[in-house]
Length: 200
Length: 200
Image 1 (tube, chains in turn yellow, cyan):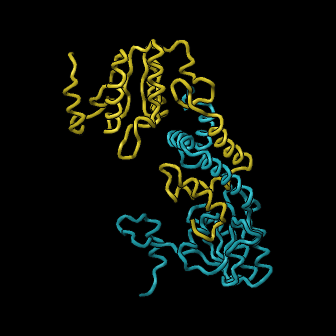
Image 2 (tube, rainbow over the protein chains, first blue to last red):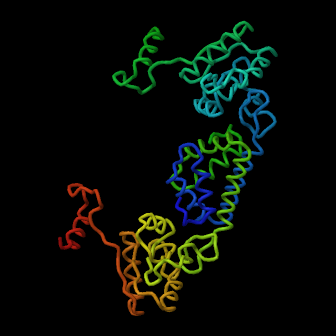
């Protein structure tokens, strides 16, 4: 923001610009919009940031974000405790829950193994996953990490680690997206769709 | 946001979604990104909102946003005090300052006359503009409101009000944008460009 603008406005715009996907132009527009808010609304916004930060912690069981002692999924007696879906982050839990089909539990790794970024297995919540398995009752781990190099490597690593503990380890299916067009599908996806073809 | 998510996260996402141009999907992404911030950074973000709101007020002269007693433009002895550029909002001041050409002062109306939205002349900072003119030394008012119905109506209204006070009232030029293509220019703009043609 230009240096003739009020300094606190410049500072606020910089904070917005630090958020993912927010460029400097949008950040300036958002900073101005805060100026146009009623005082009360701005205070509520600031409090919402602090509350989210202070009241939310990781669920001690699945490591997903929650403001309760144990998250609402782990605490729900109707969920199937024999299946754990292993995901990279809380956003993946939200995406899978939106299907309204999955009835098992989750385990949030909070990252993927990525040697290039200096992230090793010890920086993920793998120890917590192992102790959940060792407590017993877990029959299947569904690896629901992204189909990226890091996602595949992490799924493979966990599979080798957990299979000896006597659990079934499965991977999300890859193939044509529903509504997709074969003509425009990339060759890797199309190859997966061919390899994983099913009987009609 | 889905109701299984942590409540403070839902509240924060709603605050982001209340900002202009931020949809619910982006708001959720931003709320998650606040969760991923270091504690210190989140606190700074919340403080930036409160500081912008508490430390910034309208300059008593030009009504632009400032954290000083008098804004840096009104307080700059090098600016030409005989010319006042009248704009709708602080964003317009920022846009015109970016040209680095204009050396006069500004007057921020904080809106435009818009009977349909119930905004009359008495809700704008017109009285403050009149007293600046009555204090003397002002030779020209440049009407720099948008070329919209409200912008034109406000410029026209102020022109009629201020001309009798002995000041020259001018309007920003309208015509082809620099780099524009005649073929794709709308007919209203093209007509303005024809009517306001200049000698070569």
